[in-house]
Image (cartoon, rainbow, N blue to C red; front, side, top):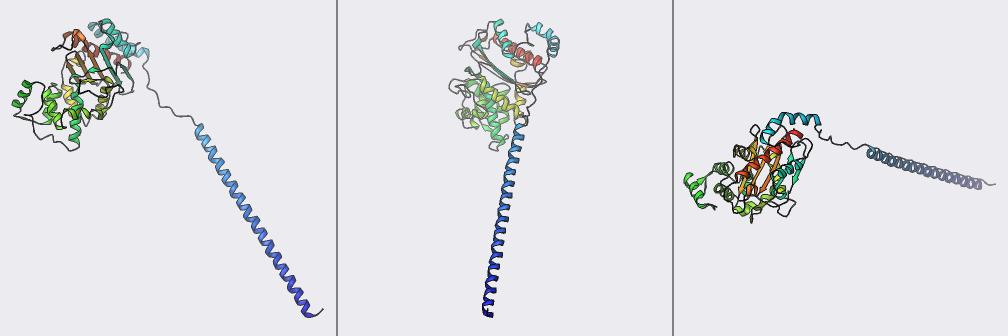
Length: 359
């Protein structure tokens, strides 16, 4: 064999060995890549399983329930009944406060007094527990002067927004009015111009109409003011707020006004002061003399109403509207003595139920 042939054979064998090494390297590398891919897939699957397990664990955790308000025991209720018994008996207003709900107690009073079911509407809310009661709460009731509370709140909103000044004296000589004599008296007493604080005082403490119209003018007139009453809530009934057309409202709307007021006491502190001073010894204050009561009564013709924030040990709000008490009618031009007495008695009954069951 010649040297040349040997050289060629060696070269061929070297090439074959090199190709073998290359093939082996590629094969091992592919195996390594495949192994890593499998490991990655296993990790991903394991991660998904862990996430699923975590979800199951999370979902299996018991839902934490908010603690329910503690109900007063029968013994605790009875203690209040015994303590308040002499007053109940003196007023002739002893009912089974401890075992009836608020609606049932009011109905028991109405039955005893011969008051028809449709003559009283109310909405009540305890501000500590959120507990509510209502009767005829979407039934249209004549509002009377109770519109003056949300009206005053609207004006305070404008003052807070910097759109009105408490120091400016506003001309009232051409203000709309209901009674010419009352209007002329205000023009004379205030030299034709009033500050907002004066309008607030006389529309809330004394429930006068001329200062209420003057407040409405700051908002663009009474029609625009009524359109804005929905700022504080809307009834689930047909009458959403207070109807300007027929002066009708519902306790379902007005309880929302009172709740808005109670949640913003600092903002409306002047309003609270004035309605705290209003009608001492009457309406909700008739038989409740030892607690702070912020009230806005409303009377016109057949209607005797009162809306109140009552600062009992546990405060509550109440919208109480009545019709035809004491024989009053749409033609009545004076408050019925029997009617105002019954509003005072209803107020006592509501408050006593609250004392027994909620305080």
